[in-house]
Length: 235
Image (cartoon, rainbow, N blue to C red; front, side, top):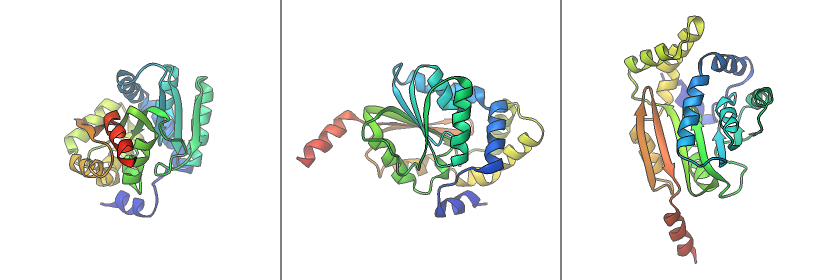
């Protein structure tokens, strides 16, 4: 099935209405530990108090966890329904996160604003992934890092079954998520080679891609020496 690929040809794939509410509820039940693990990755690779942007934060739990840890966090989300949910969740958690509605391919922030950019489980939804990568590069400070966490197109059925066991989901939620993984989510996901082809068209010269469970971790660095060469070449 190529539902995800076909859907993102016309526009970025967002989650709205009742589906956004279900996603928030399911994340509270089954994905908070996953968000903590993602926050650990960010924490390991950037300094305390750094400025962090989350692109497509969904219900906002990763951004909220990062704010709890003392980061200055902003989030850009295409779904107005999710932005409302994010703000409510941040208020409930008593943390400050600057959640805004916007598009990954046209980030509203100025050049060189963030030390770290993170995007989890959403990159495969973007209509214009190349422009989105270029926007991440633009808003990063020199030597800043970006991390994309998303499903691996080459994930096996065994990978997916293991993921569901670790998630602890049961009943309808488990059946629905497993079906989603095996059909439209996997079909729309990128392979390692797909990511490499996109990165080759950007100014990111320093990257690393690692397989983790059903997903890929894509690490990107805005190399300061490359930035300096680019500035020098323009003079």
